[in-house]
Structures are given as structure tokens and as C-alpha cells.
Length: 625
Image 1: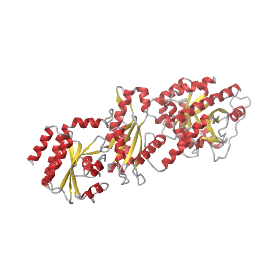
Image 2: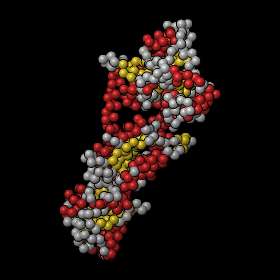
Image 3: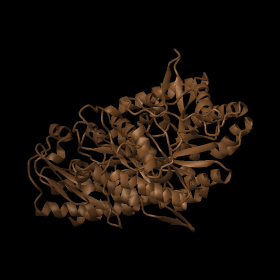
């Protein structure tokens, strides 16, 4: 044994190439094992295996090892490195750790394999030494001592080559986070095995609002955000590997059995870990990520299919659960295809001028006079059919569509307001829904001023309607500062769909608005003895005390209108009065029922509920109808 040790130490001292040194180590060490053959494997920063020495094994076996990712059930070596402990397999044919790899070893006559991790100075596993046996057995005590000697010599040899190995690792590392980069992920993904459904999964993790952070606070702060998120995600998913695969994107390969058993819990760990306030040079941020996940299924014959599914899940999460987690399900692909069709149809309608504004009146509940309108988006099909937004609302999840529709609708509304004003009609204001994308992607106030300036319409004729989730769901100051800027210029701001999310009136003390629109779900519950009565009464009273007007949405009967008024509500809209109508019909309504019109007569509200209501056609993501 001493002679063996001295021979290898001499090779190390002379600077013999690492592969030659380890090949010699394997050949000489095999003399101490009864029908045993040795291999030495390293692992890179992306957790993939590379064969350093295996003199007794054919090239086919060497090639099969290359690029396999470590994991809790990846043969003996992959498992030993993943667990950072010795793994002894006495029966390759029947051990679950070898299920996906036994066809590599059994044809060569190997029936058992014991592997011990090679560690660096910090105690981390950087490789493994394995001994294969031709019979089903575990190594005896003397063989274990030889194996330990081999591990120590490998550690010495690899330490000498540390600079070279570090250089190789850096080629696959992201400089900012220290995590494996996109190139490393692509290599690992291509090597993942698909024989065992459920054996691995992918998380695609998107950092929310990175562009806004960079634009608002500078790229130094944005870099600090990315670095912190990367560290937190990696810590939450240990021992699995996390990659930085894009500017604001991380991807994790999930192999740990506990994490695979409950992906939702694993995702929650990430969300909770990330959502801790971060301070950088006086700037405090509250990081947030959105996660899409997919598990290997029997239908996934290639790893790229799982990646595609995880991407679909992420897109869906960003549309419906930003700041949360969505696991892939088969219908998402159909949903994404429908969304793409909707985006195409809307862009085509914009190019061809087939987007129109329809107007639903808002009335005083004591006199049933029109005081304003809400502008609702409609698309005219190529055959001339007017299509409500509910039938193409998937397109609003695309930020480009949302922003372009807002620009287009602002122009239409300004044009129609100018026409009504020139005709001497008593139009007071028109509300227009905008999305969070309008605040984040461009100068909303500038676009409003441009559109209304072109038609010389005062800005106090416009009410910008912001949905509750957009108003409170964002965790930075972009929405708040945007709302303040609008109000300073005379644009009124309305909080739409109040009560459908998690709004609290206390938020209005920090970011006040001019109007609250009570969601129709409350109006439908205004029945004697129902708790909704007390809630709406209290909400109206508090809003009045704060100087905020209240509009009840979705009023469908005279009885509902009278109930809202009895509770203190002054304004309402809904199918009881009118559905959304064209510009010409809206002008006619103003002449007949507009407040201050010399010919005004009160509306006569319907007393029966209609099965169809414009206010039921919510799009959800954008608030457009």
C-alpha cells in the first residue's frame, strides 16, 4: 500500500497531467481489490458528471457517463456526489438508484458498485471514486481502506489542478450570481433522461419588474436585486441546482424526492424566501418572482418538452397569478395558442381601424340623469359584427396589445368628447380602463395629453379607471407615482371592481383616488339581512367622509338602484339603465337624459334581471369589457 501511495504522490509532484495520474491510480489500485475495477469522476458547477479516469472500461461506457446530472438516484457516483456521502450498492440489477443506468453496467459484467465522494477544502463534493465488482457484494474492510486512500490521493491531484478546473467552471458560471449560466443549463438539459416519469421537474422563475427597477433606480440596484434573488432561490432549493438562464430568469432542475413530492410547497418556499425586503445603498426593495413548473411525464420523450411546458406554465402564471406559482397542465398549451390567435386578431383590427369605443352611461340614482360614461372596447369583425372584449380578452395579457389599445382608445374617446362638446351636449366625463402595463411600459400621462391635446379636450373630462389588483397588487411605487401624476394634471382616477381582490380603504390614505366603483358581486347581494348590506353601507359612508365618490356597478333592476340609493349611494351604472352603446346612440342618450340638458327626462330603469349584462363581460386581466 505504501509503495502505491508513493508512486501516485511522485506523479502529482512531477506535474503529470491529471488524467494520466488518475489512470495510473486506477490501474495500481485495482491490484488491491478482488475483481474490482475503478473509475474517477468529477462534477462541474452545473452538477453534471465528467469521467476523469476509467482504464478498464470501454469508450462506450465513458461516453455514456459524460454530461449526466447528479441526483439522489443517479447510480452510485451521481448519488454519492449529490448526497456527499459514500454510497454502497451490492446489487446493481435491483437497486432503485441504478434503475435508469443498469443497462450500462450489467452488459459489462458488473453487478455491484461502491462510490465515495471526493471533497474540496470546504468539504463540498467535487467528484467521486467508484469501484465496480463482478459479483453482488459490498467491499470488505481492507478494500474500504484502499478506497479511502484513493479518495485522498485524488483530492491531492485535483487540488493541484484547481486553477485549471476553476477556469473551466467559470466558463459555465454567471458572473453576477455565481450560479451556472444558460450554456450550462442547455448542456445539462440535453443530457437529462426521460425514461422515468416523475423523476425530475423544472421551475422557470421570473423576477418581476426588473426593467422598472433598472429604469427607476439604476442598473446597480437591479444587479443587487438579481444577485439577491439568485442566492435566495438557490438556498431555498438546496440540494437541487439553480441556473441563471436570462436577464431576469432563473431555471431550477428539481431532483430531490421531497421537493418532487410537493412542488407547490417547494414553490412556496421560493416565494417566501425571495419576498424579504432588500436594502441596497439606501434603496429598499421588496423582491417578487413568478414561477412556472412542469414535471417529466410519460408523454415527454425529450427534455425540451418539459422546458416548453414549464415556459407555458410561467406565461400563464404571469397572466393570472403574478407573484405566484402555476404548475403545467395539458390545457395551458391550448390556452396559449388561443391567446396568440387573440393577439394576432387584435393587432390586425388595430391596423385596419376596426377597434371602436362603446359607452355605458353612469347615472345619478336620485334623478336618473346621465352624468358620464364608461368607454368599453369593442372589435368589429371583418364581416361587420361587433365583438365584445370578453371574446378577445386573452390578448390583453400581452403588454404590447394592452398599451396599443389604450393609445387607440384614448384617441377615440378624445375625438368623441370633442364631437359631443361641439354639439352642446352636457357630457361631464368619460371613464377609460387602463392596465398596469400602461404605467410600466411608457408615459401614460404623456399619451393622454397628446390625444386630448390633439382634439383640444380638457383633461378633467377623463377618468382613468384602474382595477383593484393593479392598484394594490404591485409592490413598488410605479403605480402610485403614476396615479399621483395623473391627478396633479386634473385627470380623475377611479378604482374599478372594488371588492374583488384584497383592497382595503386604508390604502387610499397613501394613494388616494377620486372614485370607487363597487363591484357588481356586492350589488347582487344587496338583500334584506345579507351582510353585504352592512358592508356597502359602511364603504359608502367611509368613502363619503374621505371625499371619494362611489359608483355601484352592475345594477340590473330598479330595486337594486333604490337599495343602493337608500344606503347612501349616489351614482350607478348597469343594464337596468342601458347596455354599452355606440357614439351616436350615446349622444342621443345625452340629449334625452343628460344632467343639465334642457330636454332631460329621467331614465326608467328596468325592473327585471336580464340574462345578459355588459358588466358581466369582465376580462379580468385588464379590466376592459
